[in-house]
Image (cartoon, helix red, strand yellow):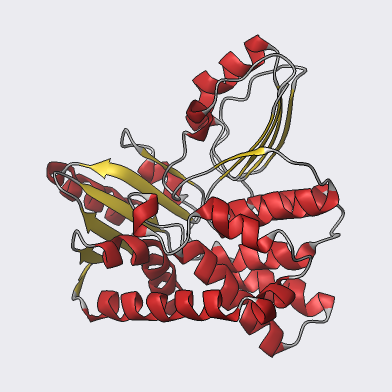
Length: 317
């Protein structure tokens, strides 16, 4: 029998896992990757009586591996806020899923634990661009504005650190970042004790961010588009740049196109008060997915860019 913790390498995935393991400590095999590496269950071969916890990974994107694991007699618990249109009905699968706006996977764990480690859920909310939600919950908990600003920085840094084509693009591998965080029950303690790591990440993020802001953007009706080159810094900043731009002017949709060797990847952010989910647009393309507020397409051929822009203009007019 083996135990696995499988988690998205971004702020939400790490904070979701961290909350549960503070409450229920155990030693397990860690499986994670860069943010867009979502078919993480393919990295393990499950056996009878294996125990697997999954955080911030779409159940729809891991159907085959999940079904094989269930057939082998493994047991799963799943916390997620991404697409969950097809959930197997099986006694060895316990799901805590939502598609509700403004709810991240860490808030699902927070609910499961009755708010015992909610400060880490706030970090995840900031990382997932749910800043209003985080500020509201944090104020209710008694955090000052300065403390909430620190939690926001940590969430954004953790999320920034998850973007890239491979672990080599990142400042810290996500499993290593989790191992550094796991000793701290409170995020403010982590920030105070790991100042060099935080400072180095912050400096790199700001440098990458300035490069992204300096690039031109175009606006086609209600869609703002920014194109990034095939560079390490651009791969690292693409998600945070999309979040920052959408916060700046929330009445527009935003599309970040990141050039790759023979295709593009796309980050989509919907206007704040529009009902059409970003994931609904992304899923019209073979490698697209995501959630209501934010979505992405991993492999977007150049000839399909115009089609994507047209769909966004039509949906968000």
